[in-house]
Image 1 (cartoon, helix red, strand yellow):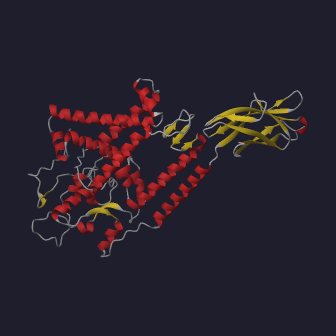
Image 2 (cartoon, one colour):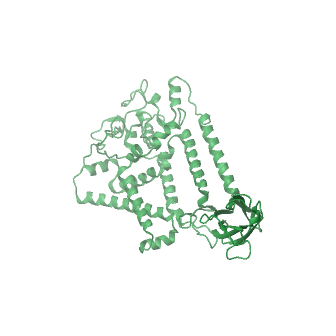
Image 3 (tube, rainbow, N blue to C red):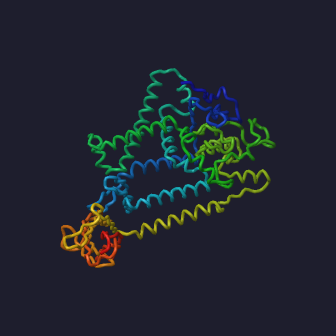
Length: 497
């Protein structure tokens, strides 16, 4: 493999300031540097220390911990329901999320959840830029983890560059093999955890290793293992640059007053090396050390302004703050700031941060409204339901007495975790007689958290037939709670008399 990036050798690099060596890192992923169809140039981000790096470590550990641990959390729903807290049960046609249970006909709740998540992302982006990309996106979280593993086996930036440039040896092969082996283990754990969300975790683990799991479990395990290994291990910044639509969408969601990771050009320029004892008057604070470029996992130079490739991970802030501390200049040359503030300072006006503005108000109001509507619908949803499907072959049956009979399949739903008895009532314009196949009464017994089909026969006397069809209303009621549900259908008579 040909590597064009050179290591930061102290004996070869010029001083950017007393005690500060200039990095030889190049922004190989800048839009002006990239060439279409050119082989990817590897990026070797340097480890930095600071508040944002610490925040990313903490969030990464929390996110990974949740992802791997949630399938094992138990939630008692009674003897007739699974006790896994979060479960997408395709076989049982349910989605369980702690105390919430979503039935197939309630898929609109899932749609509402996606809308809420989108609106929350819009609001956060309008306020703080691409913090989702920098901290919470799965691509960022797993890439961070893979880079950490890479450092363990191959060292920091300079050591990794030297290793890649070196000829193959036993040591190099051992380091590369160890790294990829751990990457595969992490990828396999990721794929394995994913399928646990669709089956009982403890049962699936036992069945998986004995070869008794469903074929789909092995299929999706392999798929998630492959994509995790590929995207986080070998593609990394290319996913964000070429595959992800979010960088292109966010331009429509932000404005000049949104906080972004920003190089404060009004303070940093003109840039250049600073000699010992020289005055800082008439020049910028940027000493052109390229520490920000060396730290960037996306391989860009933040000093080139807002860029689609920047994920706002803020690692360049930590790198720059460390340098500013060494040269005795104020921190925050690179910081969370707004384009509007840069323009204001260039005009001699003070900075301002307006979090409440029309765009954020709109997103916040929409978010609150959709969330409130969803919560209201969730808390007030019915615990029972009924549907009626009329027989169509034949449409009706003419009995020997001349009366007309229609057949219906009634589906009664019980969303509670206890058995219930419903009273069935049929309302019609003309009097009808009703019977339930296999029963002598009109009581529909439905088991806990289940549905049950009933065959219903409705008969209309020939003397009451005066039109081609009659409206019918099927009504069921739980006498213990008074809750009821209705559905409408028609009775086909075959014509007037």
